[in-house]
Amino acid sequence: MRGRSVVVGARNGHLVARPLSGRGQLLAPDPGLSGAACAEVDPELFFPEPGDWRSSHLAKGICAVCPVKDLCLAGALERNEHFGIFGGLSPKERDELRRSGARKGAAA
Image (tube, rainbow, N blue to C red; front, side, top):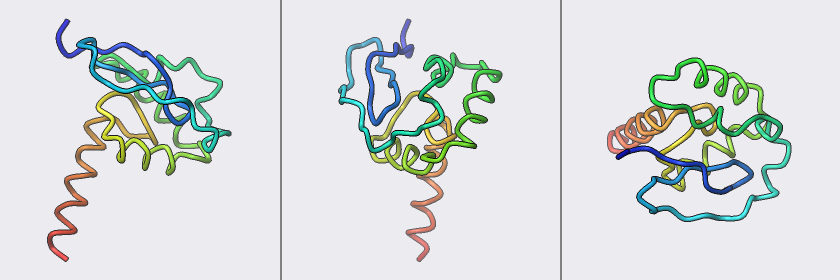
């Protein structure tokens, strides 16, 4: 089951995934993100299996109305999250955001 993950703990009020290889660090929930729209939703929705577009779309819809979406995304970018929907973006979208930011920074 290489490349798969399991939800194992919480960071900044969101459940996070850790690779089954055992790598990853768990932190306590951060009360600074209280009021997150995902707090009352099944956390598995935010960790869809590859190709599960329905769950991804539903999770992103919840993020779209979340009052702490920007903080959530900033935290995921800072921690370099490799799994899950954070701040309305998938890991691939977060990687693209990082790359586009790096290109803009290099051009400035």
